[in-house]
Length: 116
Length: 113
View 1: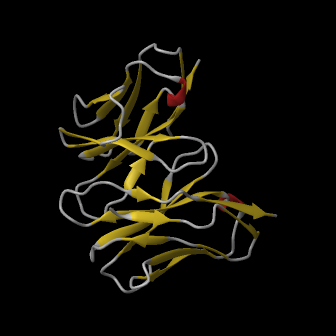
View 2 (view 1 turned 45 degrees about the vertical axis):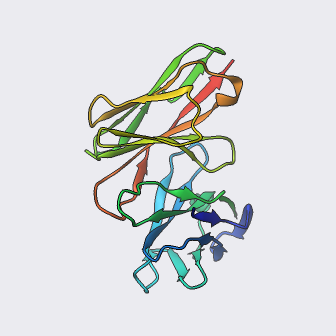
């Protein structure tokens, strides 16, 4: 079974600075999807960024980018120019690309605090 | 706007009194999920529907049931809530394409007295 590990329960960053959240995963599959979800306090979970394992190029979405290292099974999230609105719980998630698999495997999350 | 809607947002029930949480979606997605999320934890998948096919997680207690009468609606029934069932319940949907993200609703906060 696949597992996702987020080794940083909490992180903090100064506004306008850069922070990197770590995620590692374990799988024997070669094709899969990785996601970072953001869950602000008392608000709904939204997708931040997605990476397909077959793509070598790291995904980017504005201030958010990933460092995807397939051999190392690592998928870190970099947030540049941090804003107060980035404060949230961040979950790394894995989904198999095998037929019939519809489930996400979540990490335990990293709580990000942004200091003004 | 297309979205995932959960009602009610807050639900209070008594120990042992059945309760139903509802989820509706305007995305026309074929997969719908129910998650339980306790404070500062990751969401825990309870079950999901792929179209009309129900898929229960092995460790989901029998106390939790679900119904999906049509594509748009899905219900979570807790037959005899215990104090340990107090949590946020999240509904999510996904479209048919591989790699498509899950769209989450705002959740229903369940309190058991």
